[in-house]
Image 1 (cartoon, helix red, strand yellow):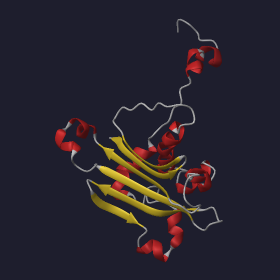
Image 2 (spheres, rainbow, N blue to C red; image 1 turned 30 degrees about the horizontal axis):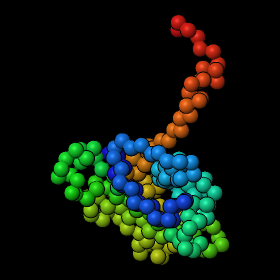
Image 3 (cartoon, helix red, strand yellow; image 1 turned 180 degrees about the horizontal axis):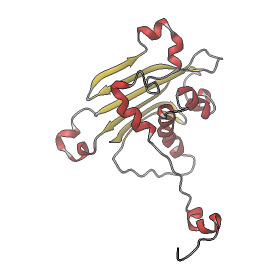
Image 4 (cartoon, helix red, strand yellow; image 1 turned 45 degrees about the horizontal axis):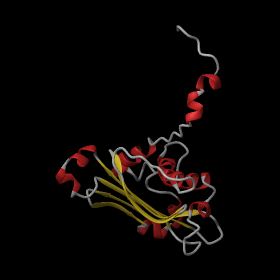
Length: 198
């Protein structure tokens, strides 16, 4: 499975973006053009889904709060931060029939500030689709009765993500490596002497 499309609204320096992706992708651009901010979406989803210490509040806090995540270009300070990610199997990319079908999975999350000055992030929208069919959509009636539930995503809750645990596991296994060529060239010097002949 791979991420085949990313849609963002009010994420970091992106007001609105819709990017189709392939199973292998290169991201290039000048300094300060948003490459790291774009890649941070994947780390953010990982931080929400990771077992043992993940979750929405942790992911938002790790980035300095919702005010640091929300685009400075957003029309107002309570604007929703929205992420939509489509996931497809590798065989879909190589099949002509597969390209016309809806994605295998779609995950959407919208996040707002609970109250203008409280700073707490809440789920304003969360949905999961499988092959174009809705599996889950929030807020629901239980969320309306107990708004505290909106401080957590269903993605992070094992008791709620049973029908789409496959994508929760996928997000939790995302890893990010920033390879610095200068450090790679001189890795032996940084790590210490390498014993030869072992």
